[in-house]
Amino acid sequence: MSKLPALLLVLFLPLPALSQTEDAELGQLNPDEMSLDRALQDTVNGKTSMTNCASGYMMTKSGQHAMARKVFERCAGAGYTGAMTWMSQLDDNGLGAPENPDAAADWDRRAAEAGDPVGMFNYGLDLMRGRGTVTDREAGRKLVDRASQMGMQAARRLQGADYNLDEVTPDADNWKYAPVF
Picture 1 (cartoon, rainbow, N blue to C red):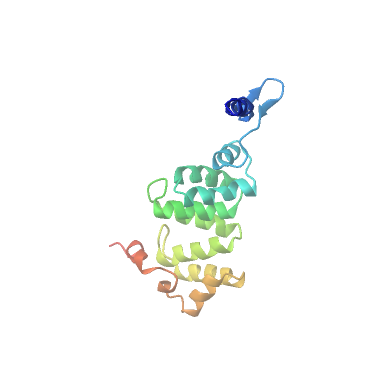
Picture 2 (tube, one colour):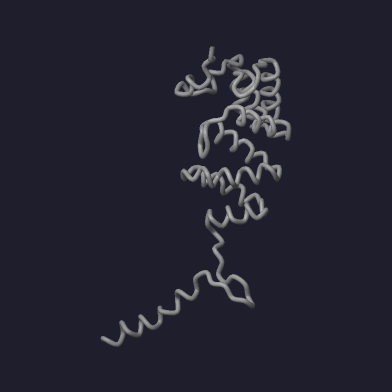
């Protein structure tokens, strides 16, 4: 029986060779393919696929906001409107960088201009509140209406509440949207 553990040890010794290695002729063998680090690396290298861009969601939900910012910035630059709305969320809440309502509203505006209903809804709220942009309740309502026409339920709910922003704003966020005099 004493030879069996030694035999098992010999059998498993080659396993570390299966990890990531470089081979001059073959390139990288067994590359890291299914990790957030790989998605970040690919995105930074210009591979802004839907899958890589969506990985930013997992990054921010796991508290890796700086990493998520890198992915979302690249993906937003490539035209992914979902990444624009996530950049807005990060900027609006100071995640991975200082809170920046102006930048958040700008991301919402860009997503709205690209035809994204979430961007339209969010920028409509920004305009109605005057957060990160000048207050323009009329323009804000029009954007909310467009988002509603595109099927966004939160926009329909806000319309049904006669555009009362408390309908879509948690009580805990009231301090953030209070007027500053």
